Amino acid sequence: MSVTLYRNMSSPYDSSAVPLLDVRGLSVMLGGRTVLDAVDLTVTPGEIVTLIGPNGAGKTTLVRAVLGLVPVQAGAVRRRPGLRVGYMPQRIAVDPTLPLTVRRFLGLWRPVPAARIVAALEEAGVTHLAASPVQAVSGGEMQRVLLARALLADPDLLVLDEPDQGVDVHGQADLFARIDAVRKARGCGVLLVSHDLHTVMARTDRVLCLNRHVCCSGSPEDVRRHPEYHALFGRHADALAVYVHRHDHAHAEDGSVVPGPADGRGCCDH
Amino acid sequence: MDDFMIRALVAGCGVAALAGPLGSFVVWRRMAYFGDTLAHSALLGVALGFLLGVDPMIGVVAVCVVLALLLVALQQRRALASDTLLGILSHSSLSLGLVAVAFLETLRIDLIAYLFGDLLAVTPGDIVRIYLGGGVALAGLALLWNRLLAVTVDEDLARVEGMPVVALRLAFMLLIALVIAVAMKIVGILLITSLLIIPAAAARRFARTPEQMAALASLFGIVAVLAGMYASLHWDLPGGPGVVVAAAGLFLVCTLVPARAG
Picture 1 (cartoon, rainbow over the protein chains, first blue to last red):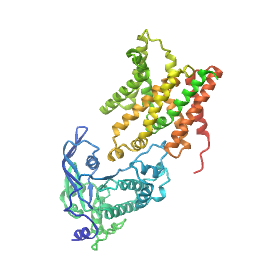
Picture 2 (picture 1 turned 135 degrees about the horizontal axis):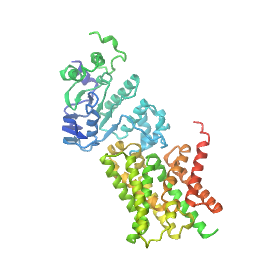
Picture 3 (picture 1 turned 90 degrees about the vertical axis):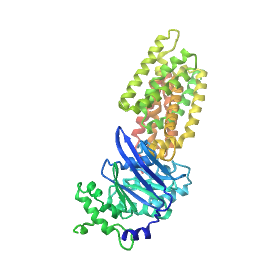
Picture 4 (picture 1 turned 30 degrees about the horizontal axis):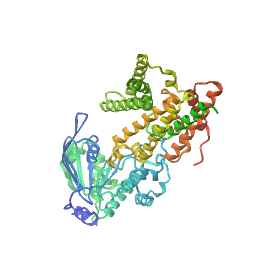
C-alpha cells in the first residue's frame, strides 16, 4: 500500500506508456564466457529502474549492451525511435597532460550554447566548478559534472552506472535527490546500477535483481521479499539485512521521498 | 642569407608549426611509442616509393597506414601486450626498410639524412611537400578537433554520443602518417617523435586550454628549429639532432620555471 502511494504521489512513472527501452532475451558473451543470459528489461518514461546484484553479475555489461558498447549474442535491445540517451559513466580518467576546464569538457560532445552549459551545471549543483580543470575535481563532484553532461543531451533516458562509487553517504543522498528531481522535472526514464541498496531503493520504481540472468524483479518491496533475492544476498553479509530493514522505514506513508536516516541502526532489531 | 638557409628556415618552421597541435594529441592520447613505430616504418615507405616510381611521401603515408591497421588488428587479438607489439613492428619495419634500401642497388639515397634529418639539404620540392601535406593535415585536424578531443577524453562517451570512434582513430593515424612523411627530411625518421612530443610536453604547464597548448607547442617547436639550425651552422653539427637537443633544452628550462600562482 505504501508503495502504491509512493508511486502515485511522487513518481511520474506510467506503466502504460511506450517503453523507452525494451530488452528481450538478451545474451552477451565476453571472452567465451556467458555474462548475461536471456535478460529482459524495460524502462518506461518517468520510471527509475535499478539494477542490483553481486560483483560479476553482469550489471555493467547490461548497461553497456543497452548503450550499444558491447556486441549482443542473442536477443534484442530495442530503443524507442529517436531516443536520446544521457549516459553517466562510473568515472572518467582524463590524461593530466590535457588542459581542459569543466566548462570545455561539457561543450565537447555536441554544439551547445554557453547558457545551456551554465543551466546544466546549475541543475547538477556544480556551477562553481565551471572554470576548474577536470583533473582537479573530486570524485563526488565529478559525478555531478557527469550528470550535467548527461543532461546536455536533453535525454529521454538517463543511464547511470554505479553513480554512488567513491562518494560519501551525504554526497550519494544528494546525488540521488538530484537525479530524482531531474526525472520529475523532465519526465525521463532512469536506468541505474547500484551497489548501495538503501540509498537507492526509496527512489526506485522497479528493481531488477541480476546474477547473469534476472533473479527477480518488481517493486523494491516485492523484490526484498523474494526468496531469490535472499538467496543472492542473504549469504553475503548481515550488512545487506540492515539495508533491508532500513527500507521499511525509507518508504514513508505520506509518500515522502526522503530516504531513511543515514545511520539507521535503530531499526535493525525487528 | 643563402638560399639553402632560407629554405631550411621555411621548411623547419613549417614542420614545427604542424608538429605542435599533432604532437599535443600524441601526448594527450599517450601515443608517443605508437608515433615512433610509424616513423620507423617510413624508410620502408621511401624504398617502396622509389621501387614503384611514386613520390616517397606517398610511399611513406601508405606504409604508415598499413602498419597502423596491422597494429589495430593485432591489438584486437589481445595475444600480446601493446608495447610488445609496438616493439616488434617498430624494429621489424625499420630493419625491413634498411634491407630494402640495401637491395635496391640503383637507389642512391643518403641513409643518414633519412635517419637523422638534413635540414640544410632541403629542396624547393621538399618545401612544397611540407606546406601542401602539412596544410592538408592541419585542415583535417581543425575539422576533427573537437571530436578528436572528445574521443581522447573518453571513447565510450564519444561512442554513446554517436561519434564514429574507429573512423576518428584511423583519421588521427592518417594525420600522424602525413606529419611523418613531411617531417622526415627535417629531423629524420628516428627523431620525428621528439619533435612531436617535446615541444608539447614543454607547453603543458603554460596552457589552460587544448588550443593554447597546441599553439604554444608550435611556437616552442619553431624556437627549437631556429636554435638547432643556428647551432648546426656555427658548429657544423648534424641538423636533426641539433633541433632535438634544442627542444630538450627548452623543455628543461620550462620545467625549471617556477609554477604560476593558482
